[in-house]
Image (cartoon, rainbow, N blue to C red; front, side, top):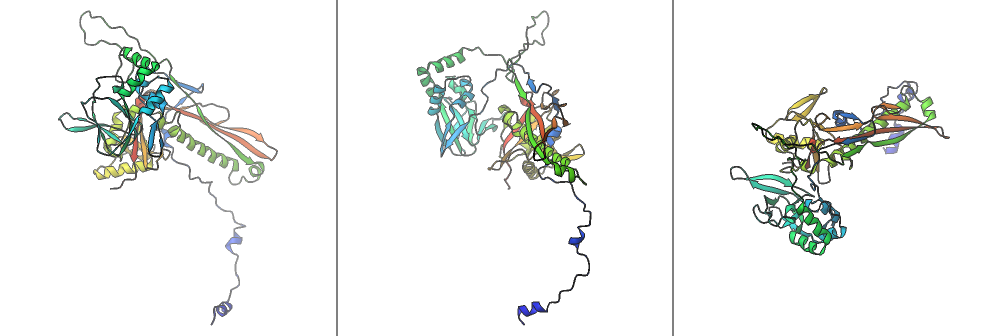
Length: 468
């Protein structure tokens, strides 16, 4: 029998009852509210103490500080050639506030590129230092001698760092530590002889270097702040020193940033399709969620006030072995008092958990508002997918102290604004156009401030994809 004959012999039974598709026309369905994958826990917004900024600007007054030039150098790459941006040489303490663009360009041209293989020494402790190293790419360890004569790692340099800058103005400068490449590195070197040679032909550079040597050494504390003269332990009629606390004459000011959008809802939808859920309310709810997600992203990544970009370079450390180990987390904690929280990408938290498992350690957990959060040394580790993971599968871990009373990190907002529906977030009716579309302006105002540099620390270049 052919296939066609088999099909003809199939008997189709007539439908004997109402089908489900037709029955649904008379049924009342049970609906969920509109769902949204973008919504996250937003722990940073929950844990930051928020300060009311009534005038829209928050000024951070600090003691006068004399520490300058503690920045990073930026490079441009063309193929396998790397060059330093001339203006970035102003990050070196010896060239800070030097504004001769022509002389800086000449110094940039005199920087010599070197490719250093892993394991090679760039400098040896005790030897004469006659050049500054600008690290364009790679990792360099600072090697010193431990208390019992053994070799110890004092720290790690990474992309954008520099070392040996004291050699530019000190003729008898010595290397205080040994510098060894951990990975293949690309560095630029600027020799002291080249700087002095250019100074012979450049009046501006010669006067700048002479001015540095003529400036008397300022008395500072270990944080670079102007010292406060005190006397302790004296007896009799000793002369008590006179002092005063000097302030920074140009303190930093943070202006509230803004995130906005215009929500549009057709009046017919708003009038007729509001049961069982109000369409305008649901549209607004999801829009507010998206604004809050963007707010947290900006608080972490914004170039002006974001935490990753506003961390002091002295508070940025590199992992000793690439992966986030308990040792690295301890180092991060040791840089500040009263750390309140870690903030890390979930993949970084998983990588840290793997390192703990290898050592047979089980991170404790703490209760935060009814949620059990992983913790290290009693400091909770909060997840945030707003911290970027690079193409090289590296990310950062943030540690911070929070609150104005603790001189920590604070969030900035202004409550009581017109048409406010949440703190510092408003929804303003903008009218109905000729196409019967209703418009609402949804606005959120926010920013963040780091009150003192050691309130915020970052563990950079954390590898999250190493399995071994």
